[in-house]
Amino acid sequence: MHIQLTSQAYCKMLLHTAKYPHCAVNGLLVAEKTKEKKKDGHGGPVLCVDCVPLFHGTLALAPMLEVALTLIDSWCKENNYVIVGYYQANEQTQDSRPNQVAQKVAARISENFNEAVIVMVDSSRLTMSCFEPIVFIYDHVENKWKNREVTTDAFEDWNEAQTITSALLVGRSYENLIDFDNHLDDLRNDWTNPAINKSVLDLC
Amino acid sequence: MASLSEMYDVGWEEMRDKLRKWREDNCRNSEQIVDVGEELISEHSSKLGDDIWIIYEQVMIAALDCSRDDLALTCLQELRKQFPDSHRVKRLTGMRLEALERYDDANKHYDAILQEDPTNTAARKRKISILRAQGKSTEAIRELNEYLEQFVGDQEAWHELSELYINEHDYGKAAFCLEELMMTNPHNHLYCEQYAEVKYTQGGMENLELARKYFAQALRLNNRNMRALFGLYMSASHIAASPKVSAKVKKDNIKYAAWAAAQINRAYKVSIEMSYLDSTFHCFYSFFFFIGY
Image (cartoon, rainbow over all chains, first blue to last red; front, side, top):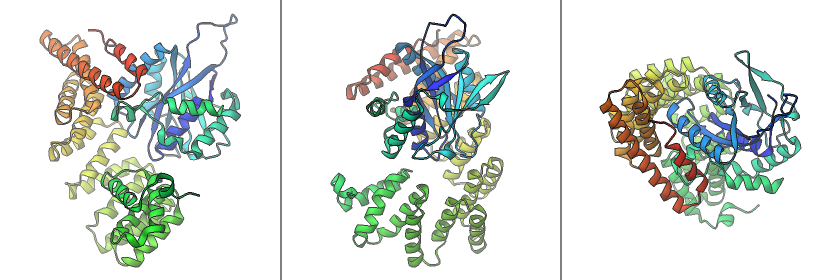
């Protein structure tokens, strides 16, 4: 499945990774639900418009993940989104392969969206300038997760994504990024991150 | 560039108190610690008295986290001058080597400390941290187990071991570590709640019931623990939805789930009144109907 990341989705993934450099982090990728399918059977690329940062630290426990998936699923239905993928940055910067947790969550997402992808963030290449895309995209092919080459095609607008992400990293916006863990610590913390979304919009 | 104290209109005492609070809470907000600590050290060191040494240590560790080797070295050199033979300072030297990824040198350094003082727990724990940093989970687990045979009361170590086991998906052993922690800290709601999460993840009816009981216990210890509340709802709902349970068990768990749901609703209502979270509150209503029973 050809996916494209918007600047908002890409930069929030990286902000989440930057906020917790010593932890593994994960989250969900969402796209707008479309009913149209082109007549020749090939849809256009699926545009991941946003991501929802989930957890940091210990990712391998089930109950809060189930709560998050259910709540976010409801939110998606209200906003005409669908969960299309899962992102993760590992604790070990030198290892950016999808582990058991990633595969399990992606399998769960695939129940609702059969071309779900795993996006692994390569935190070893995280820089302030964001001069190159640092994600690996994995598709489920023949029962295995296969890495595909990521070019600037994987972005709706790579230059915009690069500029915005770099600006927000330099401005330390990650300090205000809210993930689901933060929400569970204090319900007032809003995992939809409206403030950061606004910053992204302002920079577009 | 404006100093922090100018930008935020804080005095040096507030900065010092902030650092103390972060020390006590063991926060890892390294960038903030570096910002506040660096200014405090460079502008107000004479006013800090003996506090300065612990501040040097705190700022040094935060500086290592932020790749500020210049600042880390400055702090380390001050500490070395003041405490020339201290093992505590030697451990900081080792941590700097770790931050530079010079793990072999760091290990030699810690081994030297352990030669002089075989009971030095800090050096042993740093060696185990190196194994974790290198991704050598199996060895880290083995060394940590050996360490805990000797130092059975070290809670930080038990917790670290539970994390390592969870990452390896060895939930049974993770549960064992958390049981040790709950035994020695019966009033700690976090350990109860984490234990319940591990049991839930293990799965199966028995574990699910245990999970529900420990989520409930965590709530008794702290009725604002949202994870425990959600966990109670989830485990009770799953039990009630299972075809294998008796009618009475089903009925009881429906009651528990309904109670939890009401509490969660109330918690969201209160937080909404304090902010404007319409979207998340809205979708929370639909949450309750996800498990049909």
